[in-house]
Length: 77
Image (cartoon, rainbow, N blue to C red):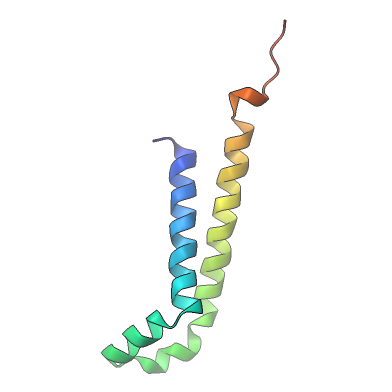
């Protein structure tokens, strides 16, 4: 497995996890079950930057993969 695939997988996993916690109320339900509902008000300050950083990681991996693609290099005839 090359490094671009690892970066792409990490970025997608981070984006999905933060989106799951932010847009659906899974994390809120889990925190209320444990008794930590006071921290729910501050979740947007953490989850939205994680989501943005994960999407940036995905874009970085895709751009890096396209630059290293052997089909895009010019070869002398």
